[in-house]
Length: 106
Image (cartoon, rainbow, N blue to C red; front, side, top):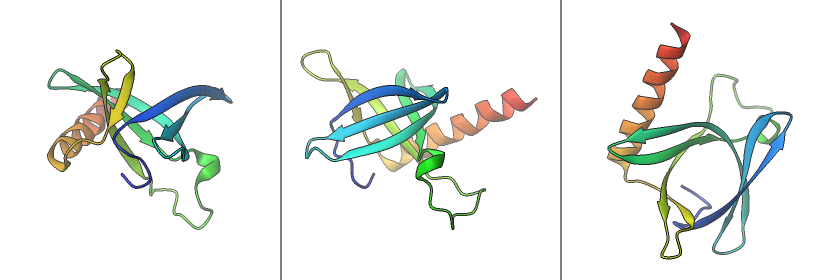
């Protein structure tokens, strides 16, 4: 995931009832993401995130959405950290996310 290292601090704040998170990586770079879902996969939890609407470039098609998936782990102090999973796990979590969306639409 470009711009994010394996360990991140995450601060949550509400913006018009949206769930927007501010990630601060080890280098101090801040990136905003909108929380779409938390998915359980093989006993682990993953965040499904996208770029907030107000951060999307105007020339981007509405159907296109950048999806980012981060695994929730804990560091030695019990603090949550957010790690990019390998491609196979990322694809499986994304497919589970799509399955859950389909179930909600039915």
